Length: 388
Ligand SMILES: Nc1ncnc2c1ncn2[C@@H]1O[C@H](COP(=O)(O)OP(=O)(O)OP(=O)(O)O)[C@@H](O)[C@H]1O
Ligand SMILES: [Mg+2]
Picture 1 (cartoon, rainbow, N blue to C red):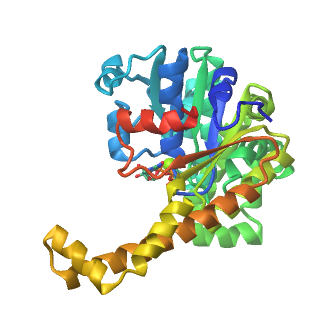
Picture 2: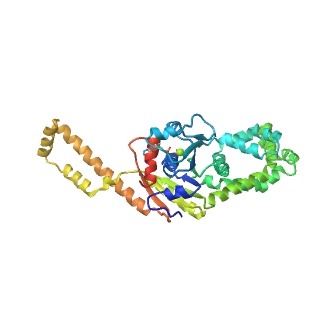
Picture 3: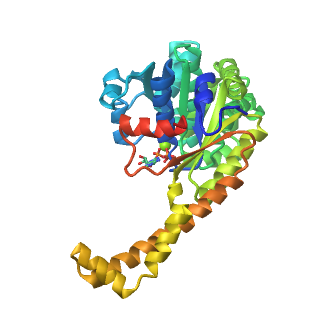
């Protein structure tokens, strides 16, 4: 676990090469990853890259990510300057395009152009890479490995997709290696195409053939035979990706809100990361209610206001030059909702205290009063991450 000072991820961002933001869906993973990268580039220096998944349109625009694609795009210094900041380092951003990344990977591992083209044009390959979430998980980790290996970045902050099972992406490299080493695959592709053509005559495949069409079986055969030539490269690479995730250069930042369901999911996540021996540098609780809501003085004032007499309301209405019964309704609503928020804020605070940190730094980031979609917003959020 990282030994950062309490309430700051400064050391985490300064010492690690890869920080992976993960956690339940919709809690602010993408925003937090971008904010951490922006503040690191700006205040800590170095060349920082944020590798993001599905950023909201306006956030993508703010990072200069126009259009889709894998390309790494530098965020111009003017973007920082417009937000009143002179960055010490540089920030670049890249989006993850699953299909482009898979195609590049196949291109790299294929022994020759003919094999590459056969795979790329195989309908089964296109289906696997476009439809399966797990293919997305694997390629995210693969792309991270590639960018890290380039040595161009001092720090890479990684956003992760909202997967159904939030841990899928961690297992993706190992699962891919398993798949390539599996007896099923060996059996399918060995010794040659004739095996598969052979099983095509068996009753099961005859049925499959009737339901799925002859073309489907032909596609399967061709796909696995083409993949065979890439076996070693793939397994080696998948293992290297797994090792990179587990070594001391990489740390995880679990992001959540303080609501019951996401928090429980985040706890599960933190436990699983720890079980796998992966480092959790920080737990970021995003969108928390301001602590001022649980201030005893504020609560006392609310209670006093709730117990107001008609004379007090009338006097205040006269001072404000408004109708007394209208003011009464407003005060009723305001005091009730303040008390409700105070209850939620107290519950959130006690859930936070119960979170099993296991040595990770706990950070809270308040709910800002607007969406975070520009550099100014990112830097504001980033300042909370640095504890300033
Ligand atoms: N601290 C904050 N204050 C105000 N708005 C926030 C804050 N953090 C995130 N948001 C907003 O919440 C929305 C969701 O954030 P974001 O897209 O980062 O979540 P996510 O965890 O990446 O979601 P998904 O799991 O769908 O990828 C965005 O509109 C973002 O601007
Ligand atoms: Mg996201």
